[in-house]
Length: 216
Image (cartoon, rainbow, N blue to C red):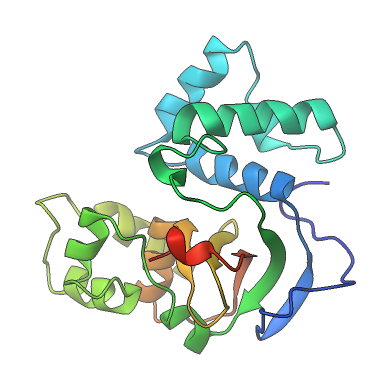
């Protein structure tokens, strides 16, 4: 089973209300999806490949994840710890809760517009302070840059969407569905905003009562 496949829907987080539930998810699926997204990232992909090589691991661990393989799941968690501090309370995952309920879902266009970027200087600047992808899209279309970083990757991703390319799921977190922050997939989220959120967006949603310690 890969991060593109969902478990059969059974019991769901009562704090979660979305347009359509696709199934329960898991920490292992989240980790696999996170690493798959970062592998294709211009910013993070090379470091991830270097960590794979240093550990003697093949890219297939990320490109074709088998969630039924406990050893492979352990290797992916260790890899995410090495590159982003997952499970070690540092870097991206500082103050991230230990116990998170993961659900696979579809967000409508209206719900997607309410998702906020990570509280990080670049995304705050790109969105003009709001951390809303629609505001970032408007600024990109106006030719504004954050810290003089080129906007071409966002435009290229938007063109890919227009051509019909399917993106991997976004990873979003919060205490409730109506107050979600993007954990992984900021470029893809921005591309959706650039084309006006024309479709329901597949995502993994992580909820926890203390998520606000991370998802400010």
